[in-house]
Image 1: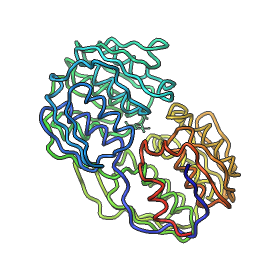
Image 2 (image 1 turned 120 degrees about the vertical axis):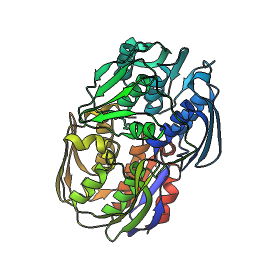
Image 3 (image 1 turned 90 degrees about the vertical axis):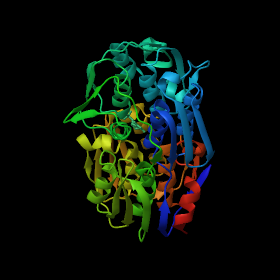
Length: 429
Ligand code: S3P
C-alpha cells in the first residue's frame, strides 16, 4: 500500500531508474552477441529481471550482483541451449514479444508463458508475421494467447505492413528478420520507439530506416559491446514531472533522462499545456540522446492529444489524464485504442480510478476526455496490478484533499523500484 496526501511543493534534484525498454534490449542483444558485456544503469525492475531469467535458462551467464550493474557472458546465439523448461516472462509484454521474435530464428523448441495480465494480451500481432517468416508458433486461441509454443529456424525474409504502431511488433519482426535469409521490411502507421534500431546499430548491425518503415538484411552478426549505458527512463520521470507540473510552487531537476525523440511526447504535451520545462545538458550515450529535465509549475490548460504523438507517449497517458484534471478546460485524448491492450485496459482503469477522486473524465472508444480544473478528493485507489496506474494515482493524491491510498502498490516495482521513497524525498508537506 502506498499513501499520499496533499503537499505544499515538489522540489529537488533527482535521478530515476534506468529505461525499461533499453534495459531489456541491452540484455537481449548482448546475449545474442558472443563475448562479455557490462551494462550500467540497468533497471532492476521485475520485467527486466524476467528477461534475464529467460536467457539464463538458455545457458547465458548473467551476473547481476548489484542493483543497476549487469554482466552478460554469452557464447552467442548459436551456443544457446534449447530451454529445458518454460520461459516465464512474468508481467512483461516487451519480454514475450521480443523473445518470440528472437526464438523464431532459433532451431529449437521453446514455450513462453506469463502472468494473468499477459495471458489476456494479444499475441497474434507477432505470431502471425513470425509464421509468415517461417516459424512454427502455436498458442491458446489459435496463437492469440499464451502459452506460446515456438519451433524456430529456417526463416525467409518478408515484407510486413503492421496495422499498429508498436515497437514490440516491429522489434519482434526485425529480430527474426536478422536470422532470416534475404531482406525483411516492416512498415508501421506511425513511428514507434526505435530503441531496437538504435541499439542493433551500435552492435554493428546495418538497418535501413525510411519514412514509414525499416529494413534489415538477414545473416548479420552482432558485435559484442563491452560497455552499454542505459539512461534514466523518461516514462518513469513522467510521474515526477507530472507531480511538479500540478503542485503549485514546484521546481524539480531530473538528471540523466533518455530523450529519444520517439519517447518525448510527454515533454511536448507538458510544454503545450503550459508547464515551464527546460531540456538541459543534452548529450549522447550508447547511441541514445540523454539530457537533464528541469520543470517548474505554471498554470496549465487542456489540449488535444492525437495522431502521430500517441506512440511517443503511449505509456504516459494515465498520468497525462491526472495532469489534465488540474488544467483549465478540456483535454481530449484520441487515437489511443492501444491503451486497451496494455497491462490493464488503461482507458477503463484510468477513468474508474480518477472518478473515485472526483475527476470529470469520460472514456471514449480510443481515448478519454477530461474537464478541468477539478479539486480532487483523496480516495481508496487500486493499481489493478498495473505499475503505471499505481503511480498515476499516487501522483493525483498530491493535490487531493485528505488521504489517497493505492493498494496493489507492489506492482510499481515492475518499472520503478523505489518510487514511493523517491516521491517522499521530493515533496514538502
Ligand atoms: C515497449 C513498447 C510499447 C510500450 C511498452 C514498451 C518496448 O508497447 O507500451 O511499455 O519496449 O518496445 P507497444 O509496442 O505494444 O506499443
